[in-house]
Length: 441
Image (cartoon, rainbow, N blue to C red; front, side, top):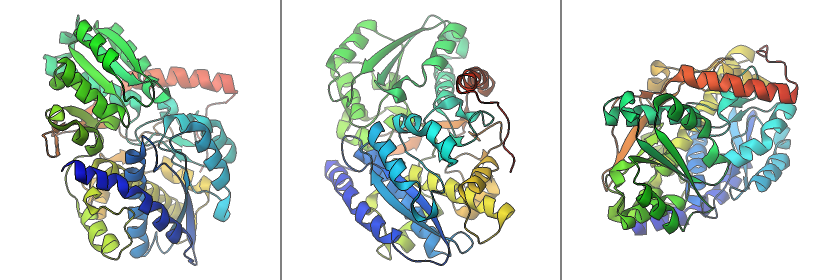
């Protein structure tokens, strides 16, 4: 893949908006409405267009194969530009349309925090797939929020476990120095409590270095890193910050093999612009790179019928696209689960879908039936576990494609993370005068 292809990827983003508008106006006897708080312009457009493009591709696939037990999915997009205030505006604008929102997924920690209290008041389930407020895994305090698959805190724990294995064991991290270079936002600061706890527990030095939005200038930060000479650098970046970081690290002579990226620093758009400087760079992921039957179905049925959301077909199966497909699978499975309890073939309301999210069980058998076996970890939620997994993998960029570096799913210390989450969620409950309890179905 080259720079020209990357340019085509980004150029195709605008096409998705027009296609989505057409799909949203179709008329069906039974329609399940999902608002899309997307961002297809600005410095984070690659992530937004890929993710929401993947989700809409899966919506179209579901609709072309009979819907969710005959119920068709409809949607409407609102451009947030990854801006917290615009995200709140989009949420307020779309939440009551078409009979009311089934769920919401802002794909932004800032926006997620901005509507956190609102979704509880409005009784609309919000997913934060692999990001957002990590202690929302506690469903007794956050019944309407689902940080599905893996939260930032659990990912951070997986990172430390992996770095410990690289060093020869967690005990070998004692006395070492780990730098987190981070996007100076709520997103970038989310893992602080976990890394600080591990630094105290394992005895390594933890240094935080901020990069202002959008992150296209990092010379001073990487000169500081070169002076510190850390054993490892955790790159907690997003958008244009990522290729800039990789290129600047190479320029100052810091080895890419010692850099481990958060999963939002691990897409094709992050490494292709960095060229040879990215070869050998690794990042976390909650999807296993590769091709899957569901992606072939999207190519054949959706794009074959001219209903694909993005112009460039080469984006199918890319990191962001696969995450969007994964998200849409979990959304539709929650609706399907709700139908099992409240009426097969009926439109579900937001409260019923919340129950569906809290009772998800996308096991290996279900993954095989959906054509996604191994694409993401098994997800099984409950009131006490809105995350549902906690598993991650490490992937390596070989200069042409992402390859799984860890063949098996990496599990961090979930008990430790749960302890931190229980403490901070209890503080939130006290502040908001919430009586923690599981919601009745």
